[in-house]
Each structure stands twice: as structure tokens, then as C-alpha cells.
Amino acid sequence: MPILSRNKISSLTFFWIVLTVFFLCGAGKTMAQNYSLPAGIGSDPFSDCSGSGPDYTCDSEVKFTKAAIITLTENIKITITNGGFVAEKRFEIVSNGFTMDLFVKNGNVLFKKKTSYYGSIHSENGNIKAENGNSNFYGDISTDNGNVEIKDNSTVEGSCTPTDSW
Image 1 (tube, rainbow, N blue to C red):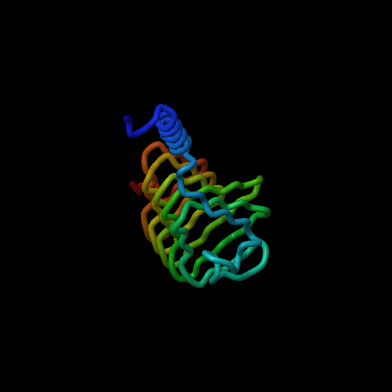
Image 2: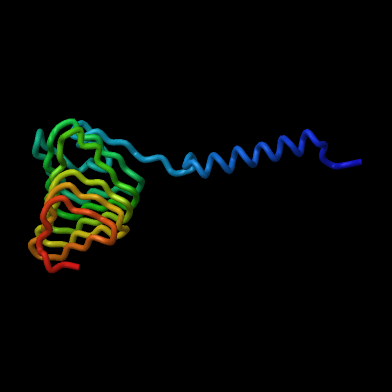
């Protein structure tokens, strides 16, 4: 007597097919955290930030540990006075025609995965780095006392300063 009937085998096969399609289509990926700015200023990861449109100041590092989608509802400028800006996973700005200008006084700017960024990025005393490549930056990227490193298959639609960075 067989352990599994024909119907149970068919059900198991169907289950594995559905599970495989689920993961191949990306449904198994970690969902991104969604933020609306400037309304989200004052809550994590912008909990140490304050101000009013369009100027906001953050007193410590702004760090995204999960994939993030930032939806802009107006132009904003974020100044980080002490610490850097870190996006550990995919980082995307939905611009709606607006920009998020980032100014970091004492710290690095680091994008570890694929990035789509609308706005200028400036670090006064630190490096700016896009580690993973396949990223798009729509704005100027500059640093006064550091390097700019943008990996392969990435684009910058704006200027990069210093131009001798790697």
C-alpha cells in the first residue's frame, strides 16, 4: 500500500510550484519601509530632526536599516550636523517633481545597495560612497574634505566634486 496517494502527491507538487513562483516573482523579498517627507520628519529614522519647510536639521546620524522608499511632497533640505547618512538596503526617492537636498557637516554619506536619489548631496567633512553600483543620482554630488566613490553601472545627472575621486 503506497504511503502517499496520487491526490496527495499532486497537491504537494502544486504546493511546491506555487511556492517557487512566489519566491521567483519577488514576493518573498523584504518589504520596503515607506516614508512621506516632510511629514515624516520627527519620527524614526528622522527622530532627531526638526525644522519647517523646506529646511530641516538632524543632530545625529540618519540611518536606514531596511529598504526605504521616500515619497516627497515638497522640496526639502536636510542638514545633519553630527553624524552621517546611511542607507544599508535599497534606497529610492519618489520625487513627484521635488528634491531632497542632503548636507552632512561631519560624517560620511553611504548607500550600500541600489539607489535612486533626487537632489544634491554634499558632505563638508566626509566621504560620499555608493557601494553597489546600478544606482542613479539626479543632482550634484560634492564634498569639501573627502572623496566621492560611485560604483559601476551608475549614473550622476549633475556634477561630481572633487572630480579626481575614484
